[in-house]
Image: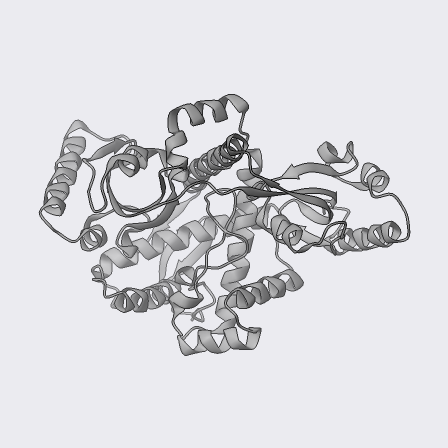
Length: 445
C-alpha cells in the first residue's frame, strides 16, 4: 500500500478544489514531525514565531520518497529547501491568522474527519494507522496535519470564499464566451513553469526573465523533460512536483492558462505568458472529454447556531440537540428556525435553502445532506459557519440541458473567483507579516 493510494484532496469551493475534509499526505510533514531541540537552528522568523531546521528537514523527508517513487529527478538541496520553506511559511501564517480569529478544531470533529479519511480508503482507523506506519508516517503527525488542513480550509472559507458572489450577467457572459469548455474538453492536466520577477522589476530584469522563459520553451519543444526543467528552474509553488498542477475541469482552469488549455494539443507547450509575477510556460500534459451530466438537486432547510464570545461550541451543539428533540416531538421546524437560526437570510423563510446543487454548499454541509433520506433531520454538525441541523425535504434530477449548463457555469465561476481571491489573500498575509529568512547553503541534507 503506497502513500499515493491513501492520498486524497481537500475539496472546498475555493479552488481551492479543495475537496471535503480529505488530506494531502504530501503536505503531511508538520511542526510536530520532529521534536524541537534547544539547539535546533532557526531557518525563518514568521512574526513572533520561528520555523526551525528540524521542521524543514521533516517536510523534505516526506517529499523525497514521493519524488523517488515517481522516478522523478530531485532538485538540488538549496532549491528543495527553499520550496519547502515557502510552504511552511504559508502554513504558519494561516495558523497564526486562525488563532487570532479564535478558530480551532475540537477533538470530536478531528476524530470524525480521520474516520472519514479512513472510510474513503476502505479502512478502519486502525487500518489507516497501519498503512501510514508502513510508509514511515506517525499517526499522531498525520492527525495533527489533518487538523491543520481542516483549520486552514475553514479559515479560507471564512476570510475569502463566503464573500464570493456570482451574478446572472456573469453567467450569461461565461456561457457566451466559454460554454464550449463545458462540453468538449471536459478536463485537462496542466504543468507550469514560472520565471519570477521582482516587484518592481527593471526593464533589464524583465528582458532577462523573458529570454530565460523563451530558452526553456525552445528546449521543451526539442524534447526536454518538462518536469525536470520545472524542478530546476521554476519559481512556481508546484515546482517540486515537476510543475504538475493536476487535473482541471476546463471551466476551472486559471485565467492565465485558459487559452493554452483550450488550444494546445496534448503535450504542447505555450509561448511565454506575461503576468505581474513573471513569465509562465503552460503545458497540456493530458486531456479528457465528456458531456455535462444531469444534476441531482436537494431541497433542504437548516438551523444555524454560531459560536461566539458568549456561546461556546458545546453550547451551540446542545441548543441544536434540544431543538431537534422539539421538532421530533411535534414542534414546527420553520417556526423554530425563524426564532433560533443565526442564518438571517434563510431564517426568514423558515430555514429554507431552496434547491441546492452539488458544490453550492461547503463540503461539510453537502456531505451531511447527501447521507440523509427525505424528511430526515441530521445530528448537529460543524461547518465553517457554525453548528447546524439540516433536514432534507426532497430531491429532484435536473435534466434540462440549459439549466444544467447555467448551474455548472455558476459553480465554475465561483471556483475560479475563489481560487484567485485565495491566492491574493495568501500573498497579502505574507506582505503584511514580518518574515525573515535565515536559510543558508551550509545546511546538510
